[in-house]
Amino acid sequence: MKQTLPSLDSSQIINNLEKSLLDYSPEILITKTTASTNEDAKSYLENQSSPLAIHLSEQQVAGKGRNGKKWVSPKGKNIYLSIGWISPLKYPELDGLSLAVGTVLASTLNKYAKNLIKIKWPNDLLFKKKKISGILIETVDIAGTVGVVIGIGINVHMTKEEGKDIDQSWIALDQATDSINNRNEVVASLLNKIFKLTVSFSQEGFKHFKEEFEALNLLNGKICNARIDGHDKVVEVKGVNDSGELLVKDNSENLSLRYGEVSIREL
Image (cartoon, rainbow, N blue to C red; front, side, top):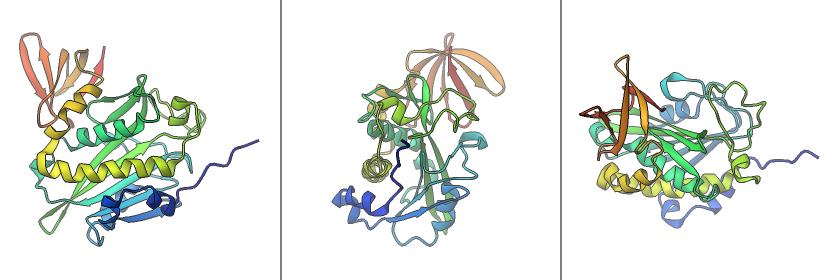
């Protein structure tokens, strides 16, 4: 007998939110279908009544990942979440935000996945080296204020057939945990942590999250191939700095790599 999976439900999400976040009066907007929750969040930023607006959809028809890649988004199976944040920060102060989000996202999902989820710099979460979640941060200038969109995709119920077009090894949370997970509970748990992130990141930046990130850093200490300016280099990963740049050693030379300018994979 086919199991009925719970739909996304704003009341269920709200019932699981902490008072500190509820006092912030976040808006929660859920659609059945959308092109992209990130695009929804970007277009809504100028009109939102709270510093935080939460956009969810049962299905994306034009979801995207890093470097414009398509994000496979079957209906009612995963979490497609974008948070519009009217931040108090300037653009240079956003360095490392993707890594900070990855840190709280991994810690949230690891409650379900027995601490087996790691972060592959800069914005992928892997369970036993299979992708389970990804992050896409985008920004919008709003009359001199920086609007930030924190986009998060999490594979939850997706079947092998539904994910057949994904061009890398992947896994869903249900498979990783051998249970049927409630997306509303996962979303609420994550939102509680993201709210705290917006406060602590605004005060201290990525360095507040650096130690916890390093404990989750899949590449730390690994020999990797880094593609830099079109050239491949074999490097040893030494960690990250306070800006979230990846520190690597290339023979005797120490390099700091910025995400968006380099791709890296473990050898």
